[in-house]
Length: 279
Image (cartoon, rainbow, N blue to C red; front, side):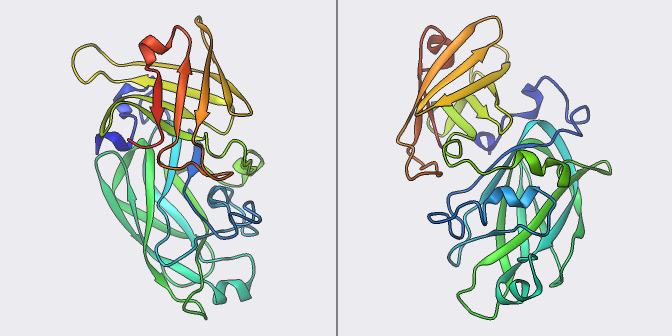
């Protein structure tokens, strides 16, 4: 499970101190109308607190959704608006998520909601802590058509009574097909046992964390990035600029499992020259 998350203890702030940190990215491999009009049902819609947008899957088995935070957080409640809540007809026509699992670095919790419109509060049996969570839909309420996609309108994370996302986050959640394959966490080191993690967030910042498998303490650095074509520039505090190239990005707007980032320049010796799109 180590590879699911940047270990919370490696981050500069503790989970309690970072309790008001909003999500930094959402990633998944497929969703309804992704190839034609990807902004309509983008997974970003899960976090915007608006009932005028929704995320909808394709197929019988929705792809897992990864939600990454810029620092470790402790989640003790999740408020879920299941189904496509954009209007009453859509809510009835499309399937509604009924049961979910939410997984952090070392634990998983089950969530269950009723078949009704509006936000429903689900208190976690025990809080989950981490900087990266994976949401999976495991059961649904059927739509009017057996082939109807399963949808969720909103997913709001709470920590100590404070919402970590919602309507105030909506202006940042603009879908960008150019950036979509980059956003998320990339993994460096041994396959299956990475020791370097490079995460890119929607606000134009990144975090590099190294957790040596043997010897030495963890290190972490944050900075800003810009993307031009498939060439990436990272401004590293006190170290200058690092460049990287996005390889094998897959279809527009989606990161494929074999995607990689190739780092160029002097820092590559300490960071590693290649980061993978999977652990």
